[in-house]
Image (cartoon, rainbow over all chains, first blue to last red; front, side):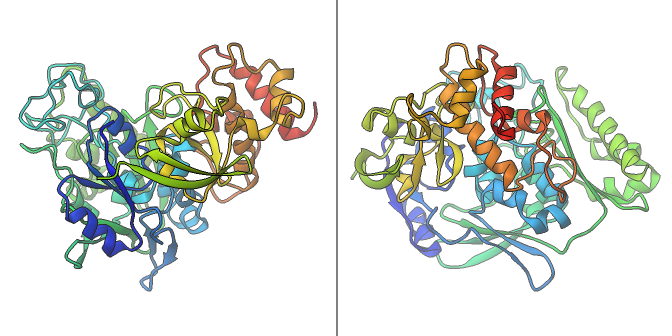
Length: 316
Length: 172
C-alpha cells in the first residue's frame, strides 16, 4: 500500500473541499472495497478523507412519501430497516444477496454504489486493463470472459458493475444527492449516474472529483411483488453471474433491472413496455444489443429464462 | 506530509492510544502493536473471515478497516470473549463439538458465531429469510447463510453448526 495522509472531515462541505483541492485525494467510508484495492496498489490515493464522522447515517421519510437514505447508512441497517423491508423489499433482498455479514456491517450506501468491478484482469496488475491503466488494452476480451458483460460493452472494456444494491436502486428509480467542492449540490437520477465503458472505462460515474454523495432518495413505494433473484457459482458470498431485480404488478406490467451483464444496472423502458406481450418478449428486447463472447453467451439465455420464471411465478 | 496519526480505542475493555502509520489496518494494529495474535490474518482481502472481530457490537473484517477509522470504538477480539480458564460459551461449544481441525479460522469463526446469534435475536434478516417482515426462525439454513463470510479449509462446517446450535439452544 502506498503512503497517504489521513484526515477526518467534520462537515460535508469540508470533506468535498478537502478532496476537491487535491487531484489524488479520495473519500473513505466503509473502506471494504477501497482498502482492498489500495493493498494491491490499484488505487493509490495520496490523501484519504475519512467521512465516517459526518452525520449521514439516517433513514427518513420524504415529504413526497418516499425515503431518504443517508450516504453512510450501513448495508446491514438499510436491509433491516422496517420501512425498507415492508415497502421496498427488493432493496432488502438485493442487499442481503451481496457480500457477507461482516462486510455488510461496514459497507455504506454510497460506497456500495461506487464499488469497482471485480474483473480478474482489473485486479491482476500484470495484465493490461483500460480501466486500471487507460490505453493499456483489455485482457478480458480474449481471456476468460465467462463472468463478463454482454450488453453495453465496448472494444475497450467488458467489465461488469458488481453491486447487487445498485440493481434494486435502478429498478426503484432512486436519485442520488451530492455536494461539490464549490458548494453547489445536485440530484442525479440513477439512470444518468453510471457511464458505459466506451473509450474511457476508467470513468465510471458522472461524479466530479470532490463531489460527495450525501443521500440516495427513493420515490414513494410502487407496490407489486418485489423479487431479487441472483444466479452465482455458489449459494452465498459470491458475485452474480446474472441477477434480476423485478417489480411485478398484478396486471403483468412491471420493472426489470439486470445485474452481472453490463457496466451498469441494465434496464430499458422499451423492454418493460413489451411485458404486455409476455416476459420472453421483454427479455429479448432488453438483451437485443447483446455482444457476448463465446464464454458468456449463456448469460443472454439466462436473463430470458430468469425473467420468464420471475414473472410467471409472481403472477401464479 | 504526515503519514502517521493517533487513534484512541478500547480493545477488550482496555483503553489504548496508538500512534500508527496511517496504512495500519485494525488487524495489524491488534496483532503487531497490541500483540493480540488470536485474531488471524488469512487472505487480508476480506474473503476468508479469519480476521473477524466485533467492533461496537458488530462483526467486521479487521483487515479491511484502517485502525484510524476506529476512533472511540470498542473492539472485542477472541481474547476478550474468553480465556482458556474462563471460556465463552461459544468457545466451549467449539471445543466440545470439534468445531475445528487446524484452528486457524477458529477465532474468526467464533467471533462471527457470537455475532450471528445476536443478529438473529435482534431481527436482522438474511438472504434465506423467507418473510422479510416476519420473525426469523433459527434454522441450519439461516446459520449457514450468515456464516458464509468465514471459510474453513479443513471443512469443520458441520461441527461448527452443531456448536452454534448448542449455544443458541442453551443445551450442552
